[in-house]
Image (cartoon, rainbow, N blue to C red; front, top):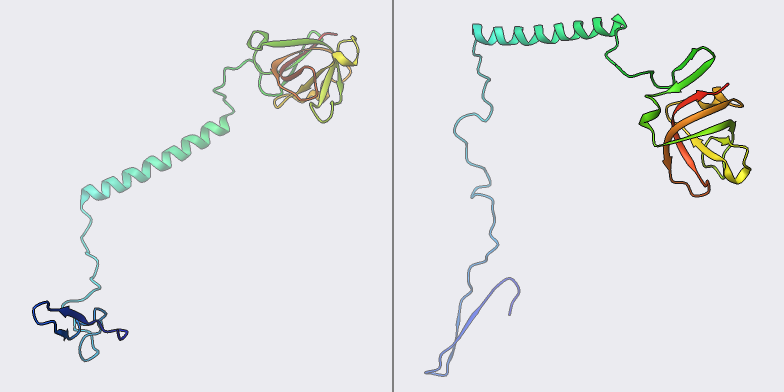
Length: 186
């Protein structure tokens, strides 16, 4: 067979004669129109935007939307600057309050936490776990290691404290607490 052309061979059984029928038309045809020029299109491809005039209803909707946004921004600015808080929580994150020689810091109250421990707060960790620990005067193997994302524990170092929080898993520490509330015991 010759490349690019297809021949159909038909064998007729009755004469035992082979006839060659000329090729089927080439399936790959030139897509260019005759003469090499594309035909002209009717009408323009680019059409002008409609210049409808704004009616009263559209103007009112636009002005109303703008006014709502402006009043919302002004109200937010006034409320942010007024110093009023909508929070009803007892204490706030990391707040240290002092009354009758008792210092405390944290969020909520003791009943909200599952774990608590009392002892002297020291700075240190065990193999990178925790930032501080509680020395319960029972030996190093009985230290309770602490971490906290809401309290600066550095302000309670070398003080006898009670801490409340959630027990978390640790690889090296025998007991580790994420502290949510601290109170001094002096």
